[in-house]
Amino acid sequence: MAMLQVVLLSGGSGTRLWPLSREAYPKQFLPLAGDATMVQDTWSRAAALTTLTPIVVANEEHRFLVAEQLRQIGAPVPDIVLEPVGRNTAPAIAAAALQARAGGDDPVLLVLPSDHVVRDVPAFHAAVLEALPAAEAGALVTFGIRASAPETGFGYIQAGPGEGVRPVLRFVEKPDAETARGYLASGDHVWNSGMFLFRASRYLDELARFRPDILDAVQRSFDAASRDGDFVRLDREAFAASPSDSIDYAVMEKTADARVLPVDIGWNDVGSWSALWDVSEQDEHGNAGHGDVIAVDSRNSYAYSRRLVALVGVDDLVVVETDDAVLVARKDRVQQVKDVVARLKADQRSHAVLHREVHRPWGSYDSIDVGDGFQVKRIKVKPGGRLSLQSHAHRAEHWIVVRGTARVTRDNDVFDLHANQSTYIPLGARHRLENPAGEMLELIEVQSGSYLGEDDIVRYEDVYGRS
Image (cartoon, rainbow, N blue to C red; front, side, top):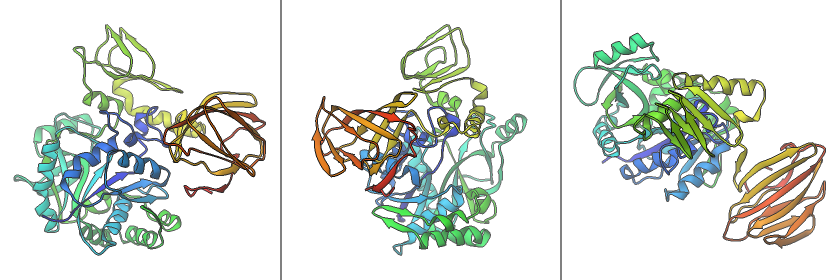
């Protein structure tokens, strides 16, 4: 059996699942279709196919999220290739292929988006094994999902005649409804899943043939990358110079070696709230949801809640409630959620990027109250977590420990605080908070001052490379 290495693509922002998915904490890191997060599910279903460590291509801002989530499920420590800027899938996969070849090997790469649902794992395994001989022989294989409805939200692939792995006749953009019905009736058009199987060298060869500008930029960024433990930080300037293009446009639509294997594996890209409704357990009236939801005389609706949400006399609605935002939409209009995110970004509102609880490498903070000249945060620091040594020009801070042990650095003093103890950090003092114990540290921080923005931080030292 060929050397098979899994590549997890984790660079998406999941804007169509706002307000739950946001730029700083997108859908691949959320438990949308079960108890595990989507990136955890993606690795778990592929793990049995390989003995090699995975390669993850991720946004630099998500590096600790993906490392921690894979660690939680006992995955092998991955090679995490960090994109300084997003450049779509063709450059991302090129960086993964270069990483796969860095040690002199030439594995077959199983490239998987990390935010899809696959319900039939045995069928997925069987599909990969069926496609493997073609990939070993030099084909660039994609997996096409047998269409079950005239879906207008997916791209399509027209498969050549025959059974099993077969030639790709053409790639088709998302169609209108009438065209989609024709594709479904033809039987030879499958949904484009975005999953691929090919040798690392074959992808790089075809990229060099059709888009040498992309490969040149990615190669330069990889050669100039800095290595920090398991992180490969691609050079920002070189990678930013790469054109942004998908693997479909850059390679698959041009190569003579594109192949497709039609499959039925219970696949869903969870690309919208209506798609999440599709894969969720529904009651006898077609309602589905997550959290404390009561539905009365309502049908075919989806609700996601952090607190009690009641639906009364409504049909075909999506209601999503988070700590700082509420979405109400018709189920057939949820694709327009991305327009809400665009509006938020245009208005420079943080709701497009951040949740109220903001995750950091050391833990998280939750802004629970804010007013004129003050802000109150609930801070959680993981065991061994250590904030940067920092100071503020415009605010002072009071820290009150709720549980755990806080080790505090304040200028030249270092001391421990326990539950119900507190301290004061004057304006301008160099300070640091860390958790030396084996349990979560939780504390309340009360800020006071003339400016309370997150950019009022001067970092002098940081174990996470942010100083």
